[in-house]
Amino acid sequence: MGHEHIAILLLDRAADPDTHCGGYGSALQVALMLDSAPVVHHLVEKGANPNLNSGQYGTALQIAAERGNVEATVDLLLRAGAYLQPRECGMALELAAYSGNQGMIRTLLENGLDVDSSCRGHYETALWMAASQGHAGIVRLLLPRAPASGISNHFLGLASEWAAKRRHYDIVTLLGLGSKE
Image (tube, rainbow, N blue to C red; front, side):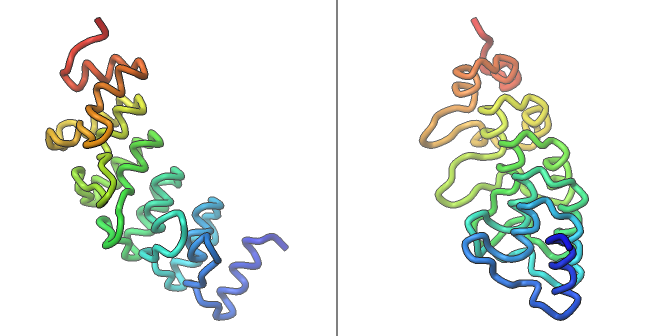
C-alpha cells in the first residue's frame, strides 16, 4: 500500500482533513508539496480548509502557485474557497511569477487576483519578480495590468536594473527603460 492509498483510506474513515502535520502545515499543504493530486482532490472533497496557513510554506494556493501544480489544482482550490487575497500574507501571484509559470499567472488573473497585490513586509510585486528572473512572457502579460509602482522594489531598486544585471535585455526593453547599450 502506498502513502496516497493510506491517506485516502484514513480520510474515508473520518480522519480530520485539516490535520496539522508538524512544521509542514496541514495535510492539504503536505499533499500539494508532494504533488499528490489524488490526495489533494480527496482532501478537498472531505472539506479541507484551503486557507490554513499553519506551516512554513504558506497557504495551499501559495504552495500550488510556487510549485507549479497544474492550473486544475488551483481551480479546485478556488472552488473550495481559497482566498485570492489571503488575510495573512498572499503571494500566490508573486510566487508563480518568480517560478515562471505563465499558465498559473493566467489562471490567477482570470479568477480575479489583483496584479498589484503584495504582502506586508514584502516589496516584490509579481511584475518585479518576473522581470528580475527573466520571464519575458509573464512581464508581457502583467505589464498592461500593473501600476508603475510594480516595477520598483523599495529595497532592491528597479526591476529593469535587476534584469540588466542578469542580462535580460529583452525585459529591459519591454519595460521601456532602455536597451543593452
